[in-house]
Length: 182
Image (cartoon, rainbow, N blue to C red; front, side, top):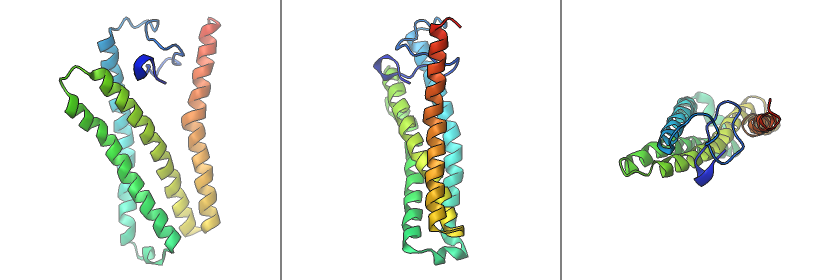
């Protein structure tokens, strides 16, 4: 969730539905809040980076497996799309580091935090597609096309529920509790 100017809000304590952090009890200056948000974004990027590196490494080893030669055209296209997707995700993760380098010392941290937040959100969308796609690809090869498509759709739905619906429910429950004084 983003606050005024597109700067992400803090992500703990149930979250806040208001567009300002003035009432969060931290007593932070804007620079302190931006520094904290930047540190939180970096931690999220570290977690994503590790996972996507493992997944990309797995995908890059597949052409060297004997069974890879047996893939049909659809499976090869899916595989290549997954590799491209994983590499784009890696590039997006590194984009925030590059952006930091490009604007370091220019006193525009708000822009850095805002744009990195946007990059992380896009990265999560692509990660969900690569994760579900990889599982669907494996099921397609091992069990069959229909199983691959079903697993892809099911896992994509699960990821959407876990990464979009569940945070939405938690956020709105916390807002209601806050409004009710609980």
